Structure formats: structure tokens, C-alpha cells
Amino acid sequence: MNAPWKAGMPGNRDPFAAYVCDEASLDILRPVVIELGWMPEKCNKGGLRNAVQSLSVSASPNILMVDLSESGDPLNDINALAEVCEPGTVVIAIGQVNDVRLYRDLVASGIHDYLLKPLSASVLRDSLNAAQAVFSAPKSSDPDVAKRHIASAVIGTRGGVGASTLATSLAWYFATKKAKPTALLDLDIHFGTGALALDLEPGRGLADAIDNPSRIDGLFIERAMIRAHDNLAILSAEAPINSPLMTDGAAFLQLQEEFRQAFEMTVVDLPRNMLINFPHLFNEVNVAVVATELTLASARDTIRLLSWLKTNASHVSPIIVANKVQSNALEISKADFEASIERKVDFMIPFDQAGAAKAAKLGQAFVEANGASKATAQIKALGERILGAAEEAEAEGSGEGAKAGKKSLLGGLDLKSLLAKKEKAADAPA
Ligand SMILES: Nc1ncnc2c1ncn2[C@@H]1O[C@H](COP(=O)(O)OP(=O)(O)OP(=O)(O)O)[C@@H](O)[C@H]1O
Ligand SMILES: [Mg+2]
Image (cartoon, rainbow, N blue to C red; front, side):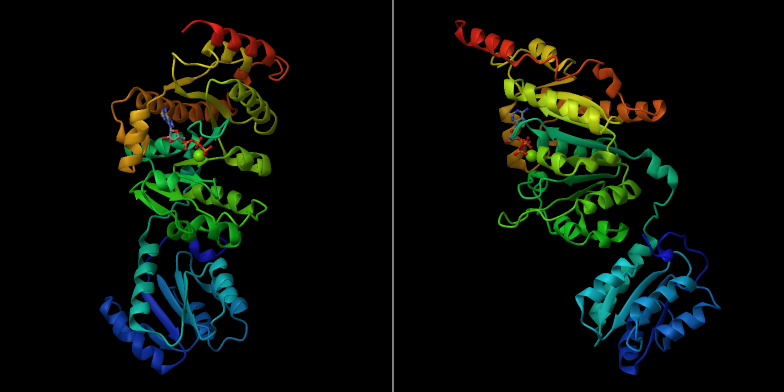
């Protein structure tokens, strides 16, 4: 991110060079280097200073190992190295100081890895293999890739309306059926089900990101995210419920920024309370999927959410999705719901208990487990709309928020009249 060697492309360079201060370390390093098919002569005696000196007059290798042991101010010296190092070089530092803060600072300044002396062959091998993978991974610094990115956020108007079901299904659909590299960001930090739904362990990725926003970069993303499929990576947490969320939200912005570089699609499972606490989460979002049920409480909160979006995120296109619809047992009819929210419900997803149970049992996204269900057809149509809506917004240079009407959303609400209808419906013979 901030290191000049991260962004560039490889040229005609040596695959590897090392500058190591002591013979003992060199003795362990050389056989590993030979094993990897590189030249042992590239393992030089000397530390960071020597590396800076020789790289200032010669081409940088693809992978560079530098010994910080003789450096009084490793961070400063690393910056000097960055100045002479060509873009694209993956740098592994080694040293004697076992200090997490130093490690973090080094990683934040773009160092790929920090290995503690005494070195071991297996640690070296792992680190060099990982560095090679990073070096040969496609670099996504192409501005076109960033432009094409579509971020959608799924918000439930009430708890349990199926927001997470939609988020995982959409992410799965984009990743597998549309072959788009997709990130699923589950911001339900304590109770998220994104990973669980796909039968995965949530890992510590999101918790680490929240604790150390400055560490978030492309490499961090690569390591911290859990792969559900070739094209689908998840970042989530299952934070202990005795630890409150302590963040100013900087991590979320940074994550969205990195996702934009690394993926074509981001789907954010966005609990309502996160939106209240971190309104800037919407800065990078193109499409808001408002998941709701056709109930009185949901009508009220749909109105409030639409109003919030209009004020705070006028660039997003809200899509209203009624989920768990049981046409024979509606608290509020679709027409009344639409009248009260002063706009159409875009998608009606039927209640499908068997489908939900099947997905849970298989540990699959709803749409994966229930290819033929009517609910799946609606969710896929929603996916298509998101792809289309974002393109439209891009073309117009604005969202479709304007379509929501000019009248005040809150002003038109007559909850009492809805209630009266509801009571009448309840009174009516079955
Ligand atoms: N169309 C549907 N038909 C039947 N069950 C559904 C449907 N959609 C979701 N469910 C089920 O409803 C339950 C709640 O869904 P989900 O966890 O996705 O909701 P949520 O809005 O994310 O909830 P929370 O507020 O806890 O985050 C789950 O058991 C899910 O399988
Ligand atoms: Mg949820």
C-alpha cells in the first residue's frame, strides 16, 4: 500500500538475493535457496546497509531478504531501502529482535515477512514459498479493475428477515455463476453467520483488521480472508460476546478500499446498528439491498432506512426485497406496504422453510442448495439487478435514489391506518 515496491510489475531481474550478517544464518539459507532453484551466490554477507548500497547501483531482485541485525533504526533503514528498491520486489526481513510492534511496523511499511533468528530451514522455505506466490500473483493495480468494482450492502430492516441469507447467496452467485472475484464482508462482528452458513470457520481476519487498521493491505487481505470457492473470499469474525466492538471504523474503510483493488464484487452484510455507528461505511457502496418482511414494524423501519439512505448516501441505489413472503399469512399486504413506503417492492422472495433447512444442513448458500426453488430464482434476479443497477449508476453518474420520489418518505406514513387494516384482516374469518 504505502511501500513503493508493492505496486509495480516484474522485469528482467534476479529471482532472489539475500544480505545476511552472520555465517550461521547463511549456512542455513544457502541449501534452501538451492532447493528453490536459485543461485546460492546471491546470498551475500552483509546487512541492510549493504543491500541499500548494492541495490542503488543494480537491479532489484524479485525477492529480497535483508538482515536487520546490525541496523540501529530498522524502520528508517527500511525506508531507505524502499527508495532504491524497484517496484514489485517482495522483501523479507530477518532479525534478532522479538518485538511484535516492530513486526507490525515492518509489515505496515510493506515488508512481506519478518523472520526471527536463529533461522530454521523450514521457516525459511515457507516464507520464501509464500513470497514467491505473492510475487507471481496477478497485480490488480489496473485502474480499470477498480472502476468496475461493485459494492453492495445488504441491510435487514428488522432482525432475522434474512439479510445474511441474501448476502451469502448473492456473494455465492456473483462468484460462481458470474465468475466474478467476490468478497463477502460480514460486519455482524459478534453474531455473523456468513462463514457458518458456508460451513467455514470465521477465523481472526476481521478481528485483526479492526485491531490493526494500518496493517490492512493487499497481502493482509490475501492472508486474512477465508476462501469459500476459487472466486469467493470471506472476511468475518465471531468476536467473543464479552468484548465490545472498539473501533472508529477506520478498518472498514481501509478494507473496502483494498477490496476494490482485489475483487470485482463486494457484498457487505451490514447490520442496522453498524450503519448508525459508522455511516461512512456507505461511502464506497453502490447498491443497498434493503431486506424486509411485510410487517408493520418492517414498514416503519424500511421508511426510516430509505430516508437515511437518501440523506446520507444519495449515491446508492436502494433495492427493496421482501423476504419470507407467505402470501396467505401477510401482516400487511404488498400494496399497503408499498403505499406506506411510497415505492415499489422490487423483489418478493417466498417463504421456503424446506429450502432454508436444506441450505443449513448442507452448509451451503441458499441459492446453491436450492437451485430450482422459486426463492432462488428471485435472489438470482436480484443479483442481476445489482449488476445492472451499478452499471446504470456508473453511466448516469448518479444512483437511482431519485426514483424513490420527491415527497418526504416519513411524511406519508400513516402507521395507524396500516394497523386498522391489520386488525380488520385479523378479524376476518380465515
Ligand atoms: N425465504 C426464506 N424462507 C424461509 N426461511 C428463510 C428465508 N430466508 C431466510 N430464512 C431463514 O431465516 C433465518 C434468519 O435468516 P438470516 O440469518 O439470514 O437473517 P438476518 O436478517 O441476517 O438475521 P440477523 O438479524 O440475526 O442478522 C435463517 O434461519 C434463514 O435460514
Ligand atoms: Mg444476519
